[in-house]
Image (cartoon, one colour):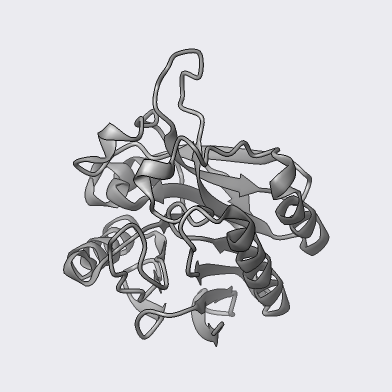
Length: 258
C-alpha cells in the first residue's frame, strides 16, 4: 500500500521571467500529478531564478493574481506544492530586505511561507534572514520540515526539525558541482542520524552566475540513497513510500522533463 510520494522538481528558471517560470512550474505539477506525487518541491527561488539583485523587484505575495494558475492547479490535483520566491521579510513593517522564501500551497486553498534562516555570505546585501524554528506540514503519515539551501549547512537546523517531530526534511537549493558533494553528504548524514527522509530539489540549469550540479535526490531514513537525477537538466525525482507487511520501503522513479 502506497503511503506517501514526494518529488523534487529539478526545473530550470529563466532570470526574472516570472510568467515563463510559472508555466514551467505548471508543467512539472501536471507531470508529478500524473505520476501520483503528493508533495512536489521546487528549487530555491524557482519562480525568479537565483538572481539576488532582482529580489526586491520580483517580490511575490502568495495570493498574487499572477500565481493564481499554480493555486488553481494545486486545488485541482490535490497536491502539496512548494515553490521558491522572494517574499516579504518577517517584520514587514520595517524597510527590511526581502526574504528568500518557500511558499507552500495546500489543496484546501491555504498556504504557508517559510523564510530562509541561514544566509550564504553575501546574501545579506539583498535578503533578510527568517526566524529560527520549525513548523511542520502534515502529509499523510509524514510530518514535513522545510529548509532552503544554506540552512542545510547548519546541523542544528535538521536536528531541531527532528526534535519537534519531523519525519521528512525537504530543501530547495542551488548547488554547484563545487558544493554538491559536501552538502549531499551532509543530507545523507541527517537522514541517518535523525531517521529522516531527506529530499533535495536543485536547479536543473545555471542560475545567478552559478552552474548547477543538478543531481536532486532523496535519502530514506537511515541514509540510503533512494533516487537521484544523473546530473543537470530537467528531471522529476520521485520517491514513494510503500507500507509492507514487515517495514516501510521507498521506491524510486526518475521522469525526464526535457
